[in-house]
Length: 395
Image (tube, rainbow, N blue to C red; front, side, top):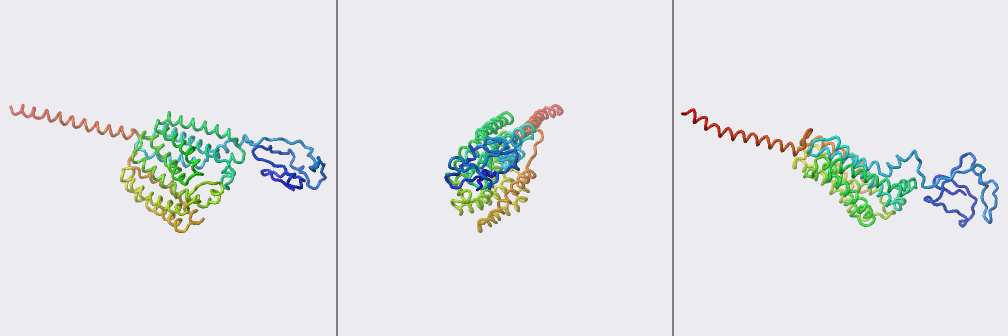
């Protein structure tokens, strides 16, 4: 009989269930022999131990490795998995888009601090999220191989990584950009780890809360550059907020068995009709927000025209998903959403209303106002002089 311990085979001669040895991943030790060629033969004679027969012990010594066990050469790879590297990269890209769209001059130092600080805060949030969800991630095929579930990293190690990342990231945002950007980062960290994460098992409202979390990074980029938030920032955040629904609803549709097994309250599981309707409504909302951007002087009017085919096709896929919800339509909508967002952000940048390379927008406006004031003053002084000169000539 062969017992499986992780990916290793443990040969035994135990005959009954009462004789089985229970092996637990998180506390048991992994046994690895130095010579793989000396495998035990199940047919070899065994030596009785009490009432239970056990195989002959190998002559070669064995080395005991504690579990969880982190290989020194894989630490960086495990940190990337703990921080959900691809999700963090998407957060950073939207933050960079918000910074570039802000009506202020580009500053390399504040841009770097805003980008790195946001990445560290996002990594901390994802690490805390995985720390809380270990029992539930172990029940899902998509998440069962995460580093905390498989014991590649201890919970204490993960929490320490999260604390160091959050502290460093928020410090970079506060001292490298401004207090508003740091406050947005701290608020988003709290919202994701304290409200969104536990709400996933309580109510489908978690999807709306998660969309707010996804809409805050572009606001951080905007605030990091301009120091304030205005209507343009709200347009950008609104598009990110609306994009979350068709993106995530299409993703969750094919993961319904996993979410149901783990006990997560997702629209795709508890209310499939609402899941389809919400994806369609918010995809149409993106069309309206894109048209509104030039009206509020965020972009030029070419932006509304150029994004119309892109947003229309996105809404069409959401409509197909609404009418016929299956693995095919949901997969098409999800895959196109991954292309839709970066293309939309690039069109935002290409059609930005004004670019500032030297001074922030506020300073340029003040400079224009001061120059106009100087012209008016000079004109008024000239008007006071002219009558006197004419009177003198008439004498």
